[in-house]
Length: 316
Image (cartoon, rainbow, N blue to C red; front, side, top):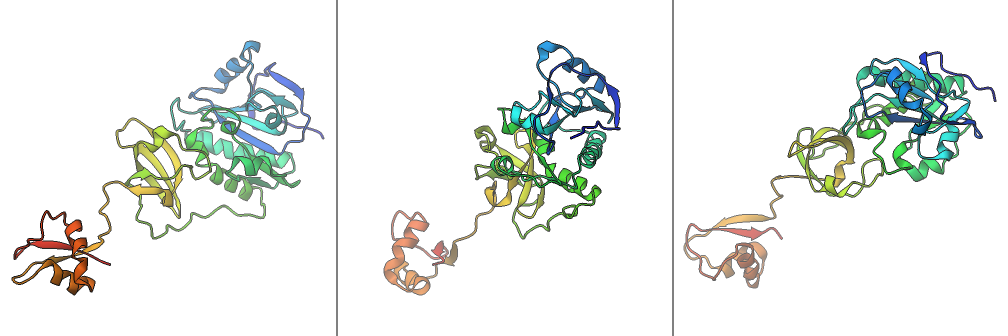
């Protein structure tokens, strides 16, 4: 097929770091985080030396400008996967230097526009985010479909960072809408009647992020503040100790409130003159010999009770 390059490019510095013409048609886009709020010129200088052994097709600078470092017809060296790079347009995006590697609004808006342009020129009407490595890599895109992939699926890296990773569904929806594909932008899901809400302090009880990635043990060991909630998808942000901010999506069902008031599993009886544990158990539990449950629940050291004493009584 005939390959073209994006008209959005305002700066070009072609890198020698590529494998020549692709052996697979383009049906993937792989956005990356630069790990630096750098310009397209700086990124071009990084990719130009041969000793770097790295490149990307495009770059988006912190001001939103677009550069080209490897023409679309050629395979860049960007994703730690030859198979992925053979079929993907790779895009490096200026970002913060620490997790969650946030990108400013100019970079993100340009990324949406560049993905629209890439899809249009390659005959695609839909951009898909399947959110799962195995599902994506085993998926055979239809002729009009482009699929999003991420660097972290092919190497022990955070790239594209949790900030962008949490927005890939939004990216796919916006691009598909601009392409007039059959799907419309995903509408925010209505929050469920969940006890978890924005601002809550939570502990992660599950083992996987919303997108299927394994949650590191250090993340599970901390308490996190919830940034936002939509349906069963909650985005956790800052850690309770203030040392981390990761903007990662987790299922609400895999979160537990920290210091939440437990659901009461008992009633309270105030002891009056003449009460015994046996009669109280008979009254509330139906059998006097269940008084031992009251003893255990109240951590009583003996069977002696007195007027005014408040006793917890099991609900069942």
